[in-house]
Image (cartoon, rainbow, N blue to C red; front, side):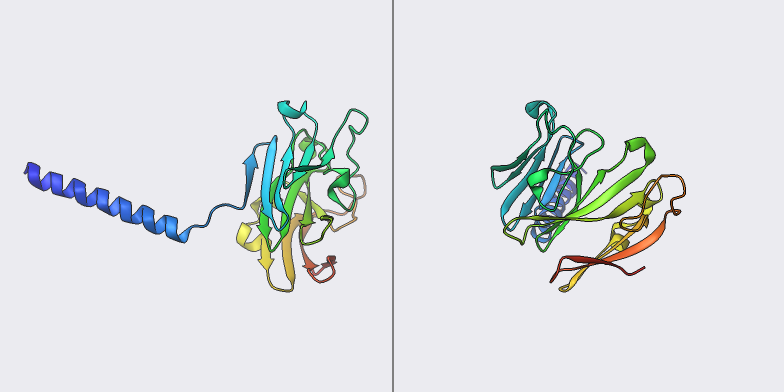
Length: 202
């Protein structure tokens, strides 16, 4: 009886080892990540991109690319206006760094609070690291909680030509959460990789 139990235990251990080996051989290492609020990173064609905003930076935003600081928030620049490149920082109405939600073909998709967090408005943008000077492309604003119910498989559609992006919220350049603004609904955008132009498709 004991020998049979021992054989079964050994079979389970071998089986677990095989499952782990198969999992390791088919799963790729993550190319982006971070921790809540204070740190986010992504592998890019220009090296590792990092956003740091925690006690180590006195809760000011610091952006690094391949170890080089490309933006450092100061007391004088406490309000981040955000521009066409990373040199002006990444807008964040709450404290911390944006969340990175996708990274493919040199394009890093981020989401950050563009209004006070309790409004439920979250802004999407893409950073194009295929350019010598990485470009920050604003997409649109989503409205929680409905926006967070959009499945990842439905949200992103990558192809050689561009990215199809689906969300629940407001059209680009459309006022949100203000008196008289249009009601949020499902929309679809397309980012053309050849021009970095965003078009509304739905």
